[in-house]
Image (cartoon, rainbow, N blue to C red; front, side, top):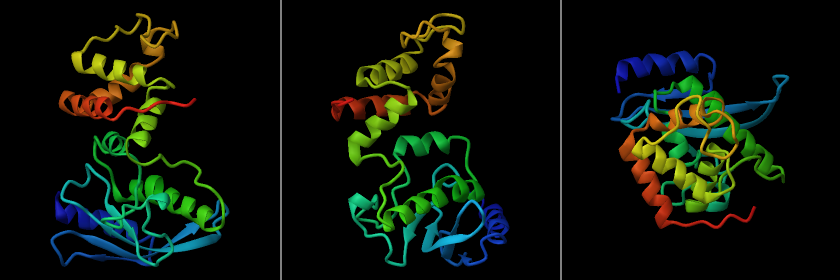
Amino acid sequence: MDKNRLKKEIARVLEQYQDLVLDASGKLYRVFGSLDILYVDGRVIDTFSIEMVYPDRYPFCYPEVKETGGRIPAIADRHVYTDTKTLCLGTPEEETLKCINGISTRWFMEKILIPRLADEHRVCNGYAYTHEYAHRAEGRWKFFMEKFRTKKTDDVLMWLKKIYWKRLPEGKEQCLCGSHLPFKRCHENIVNEVKKVGRDTVARWYLYLTKNSYTSTS
């Protein structure tokens, strides 16, 4: 991580979010302060106190985020890691795929953090989460089933094996999912996205899922 480049990147974003401050004095950069959640018409509907810490692996991983104002209980049902008190922002696999080419602070704020806090605003007002994966293996299975557009766990394992062993159809050949569509019009883009993480990561995902079975109820 180029710290000078990161400092400039954060400074540009904080021009928009002026209630946030950068602390660059430590080993890891930290952004803290208040973050407004806006309605579509620009009205402020809620404000959260947050702290973001940039790990060494950034921009190939998310910043770690804590809600510091006591609005979100540090419990699993509120999708907060009870050991670190950081917000759960999706499954590890989802994060890996989204960060494979590197991310920016602005993208993270707009696509990940603000929608997550907007969901917390809903929960604080008595509504359910709009989209949060379940804890541990169940959530990771759900992510993969959504990614591969299937309700079957066997299909997930099939795709990961095919990707690892490079046993995939050519573009005009029939897709392996049973849709009878050409591969290029069906799962090719999804497969190409997953392939970017590398065979070692695909193998690790496959082994994790086989050791942590999940029975779909749908």
